Length: 204
Ligand code: MD6
Ligand code: FE
Image (tube, rainbow, N blue to C red; front, side, top):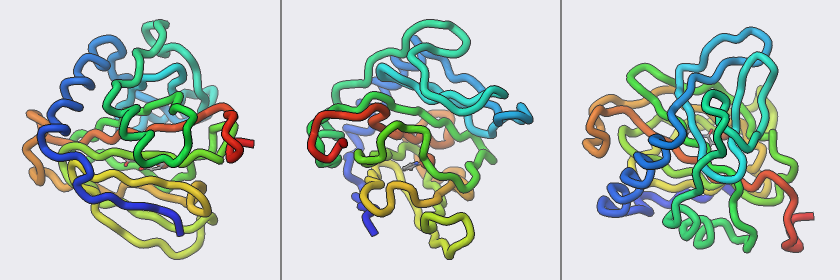
């Protein structure tokens, strides 16, 4: 296994500062409603991105692209404090290119999936939780195997790398009222990724 969990890696003051950074990101790149490939069925989670590339999903499929699907503008830069966190926990010198921002309002969830739209899996995915606690499910690299459940609270950071980079995972539910960080409640999750191959020896 190499899912590393850092409970409360970000203290309350850092969580609040990160939230202020995200308000600027959303100002520039508003949340959009992603849709399932082919069927066009909407996700229950809303999304936006920062970084040179952002993850989007619509009837045409899942992909990374340099611009917002509705405004057509480039994504805003990844906030400095997230770049610092990446360099502290990711174990590679190449910077992240994409930061996907997932917003869960009451009742939102995310089905079991693998993160495999990147060109390289050599870098880990670094995930930050803010706001209400999520019930996170993680399994192995096949859809069928056993899974386990763990809770991700505000300020928790998980690093998905090595053998577990392609583990199936999802969000079963968010526990309403479990945090007071977000004024309107709910949960925000950030996932920082490397999308293209990079120069570290591990990136090839
Ligand atoms: C979420 N997280 O926490 C969804 N993906 O809302 C993910 O899909 C995820 O936490 C890859 C690695 C870590 C994650
Ligand atoms: Fe994921």
